[in-house]
Length: 366
Ligand code: CA
Image (cartoon, rainbow, N blue to C red; front, side, top):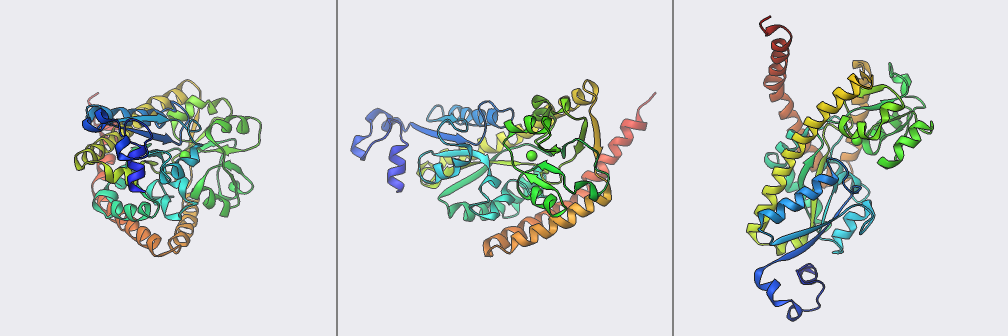
């Protein structure tokens, strides 16, 4: 298996034996790899980031590793990316780990969970809280090695056709919200539906759904949801930051030199922070356009609603934690980092952000 995957992904195309390798390509160590993604072509921030990640690897390896990127449905359907890489049809996927929760429920922890870690805290967990080791154990079961390489930052709560003033307002609400956030709202009486990004606008405008979450101002403005309704809720309890992974076929990963593995890790880390900077920068500009030009009305959930969402989220997460021993260990490790991050941020970031608001509002010379 290891040998076959290596050979078929080596420059020169599919070959049956080592003797069939094209000699010049083998001598120079050039490899051509296929990356499948879960995104539409040029999808802002995610599809574009997959292309940039691939290009950066090619540049950093001086063309030794060349990666052809396939948008969703070009080689396999978006949600077929995992199996394509697992089975060796492709070498790398670029996508959200929570799309694979049907394979194993613990995958959600590596994208986002309700009331979970922010982008920088996710990095804290993976690098210094034991998260990457647990992820390797989980992905290894599926012959995959995964790394984070993108993060959307804090997402928005979504677009609603009516205001949500109490928990009662969720009852009967048809809302597009995938994954665990959907499960939480379902337990509070809503009817969550899963729809691909391209289907949301029509469903919302035709009244098939009453509300929808998507990503954040940058992506939401592009879809034009503000033309249907003005109520825009912040922020997303369900997605405090969607960490996106690059998942390598484990045989392909192991066949790379230690130097190339180190380069890929460095490029992935660089893209993680660049993507976050890009989302934050473009979201800020797009939100200004939504509010100033399009008259969008920003809303937040009341504390009463947030507490109900939190209690229900905790119920859902505790149930998931009982899936098996590995999930329990992942849950405990994740929560340890969350606790530590919350304690430190309450001392450091939160008071600092408050003091900066005071500067902005009152501290400037008139
Ligand atoms: Ca989302």
